[in-house]
Image 1 (tube, one colour):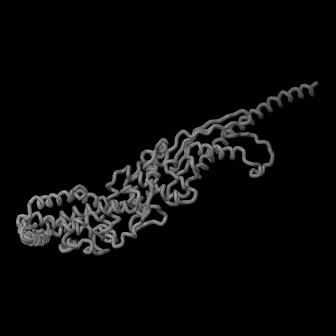
Image 2 (image 1 turned 45 degrees about the vertical axis):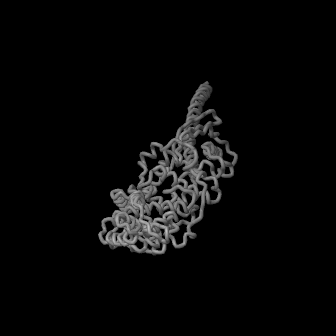
Image 3 (image 1 turned 120 degrees about the horizontal axis):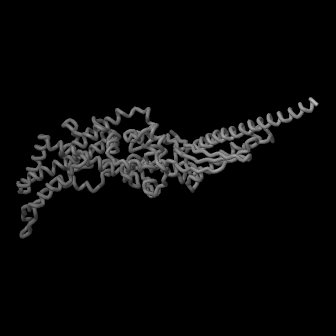
Length: 478
């Protein structure tokens, strides 16, 4: 009888014990499902980031994932499929890789819903996402001394009014005074009269203004790059894809984009006249960022004209204070107006000569800068290079000069970039990046507004044992 009682007791005890064991096993299964889901989500989302664009990193030290993956169609759905694939591979790895053969999967998990609802594209917030990465990349680069020099140069340029002074209007005002006075006539033969010519050498100098700056200051203009692009193909001229901007975590860690650092970065990664880069499509990339034209010639011409305008304003300011040069111009004007029997023109003729001389000196300055020399923003008599006789034959009076003091061509470019409107600078810089990346294999359709650096995914997973899990995770390069 006792043995029977013990058997029943053991049966009931084993039932309770096995129930507890099975509960513990099932609880362990649930915990394992949750843990595996988290691990697989982390692996999958990191695997997506591991598909960063190699050429963009190689050329520009930027980490972004291209949603087109080298194809023609860019959409966040492509990334969702990649993420789902990575998760499924980790939930159900092939047996040959596990080493467990055909053992039963105690979790039997599968990837469920994958939805990326938030992501920040490089072009979001007018390029703020891109510039935030650049600010991080340049954190250890010493740019303070360079930018301080640029800031001082821009301040000197502004305080002198070189960007706003209209020397052309001033010159034309003196020319109008000359034209308003009728020149005397002389009889060249019986009954035939002609005006006595003034022969103002300033007229010959001003006639060269229509020739184009580059044709005047370069010894061989044919050596200028002839590359032409279609600007409509690039970011600054098309409708852009939109992400969700800078994520809060990235903003908190990185802070605000630094415009001065961004400008320093452009000179590290982009070429310009005299320092071209082999990888580039346009050879004068900084000049493109400043001008936005479709040819290298037009971009360089724009910069050269702006340099000429600055230098002409500075040289006019100086020459009108140099008593020796004023005396030379006055002597020439008096001689010319005496021959023309019109002494009342001496004063305006003197000023047209001075303006022509300042123009000649300005062309010499631009030639010096393009040749690798230096030119100060504000000159002294020791810095003046040209003589008054040069205005009679402008092009032949210009000589190469690689020396001097002051700023070089690159530093003048930095000042121009410093003064440029922020949005145009950023968008054209992204144009340059697209141009260069598209030249590499497999990237003919590359576009920066299809590249993200941060994303947030809503994920779910199911188990063959009737369980499901959901989570939201944000990952990115920050």
